[in-house]
Image (cartoon, rainbow over all chains, first blue to last red; front, top):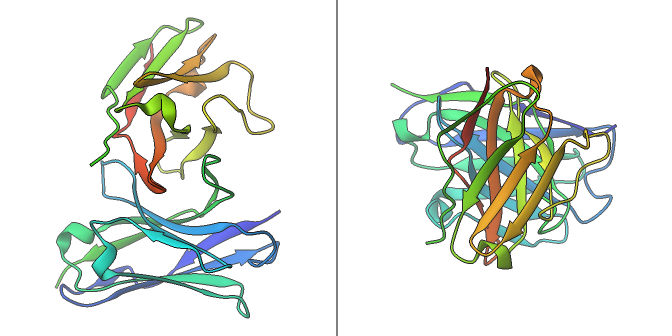
Length: 120
Length: 106
């Protein structure tokens, strides 16, 4: 059974870069052309998709975050990562990694989420 | 930009039918998904491609999508169904989430 687990710093200073990693266990990240994705949720608020990347290289980031987001896949480590630059307090949220099987099929697998706070 | 609108809250009595709506321009021309999120937990996919249920999901959850509105229907609502529900669709392959509806079972 495939599982996802986020990891990374829980506290990031304003203007710095937020870096998170999602480790995939119970299966290979390269088996199947899935979209490996990052989604965030500010405290008490709704979900926001940050972006996604497939092992074949197809990517799509939310336009409002496009200039600050990099998503990458490391198949040798069976993990994928998020980098969000120039963070502000508005980027404080629970960050989830998730898997989407195909457009139209939704995010069928989620990590447990990791809280990131942006503060000096 | 494409937006999905959900009512902030819906209340239903145990055993009754809950209908949660999600509105967006020509939403019926796109695929809609629904997620259930309980406090402190990750979202769970409960409906995809408008009306399909992942394996193992109770049949009392169903979905439809037509015109400008997608609807999640929960028949025989139980106390365990109390949660936040989010709709989600794609706009030019960009993922869009609705703001969420808090379902209260009382």
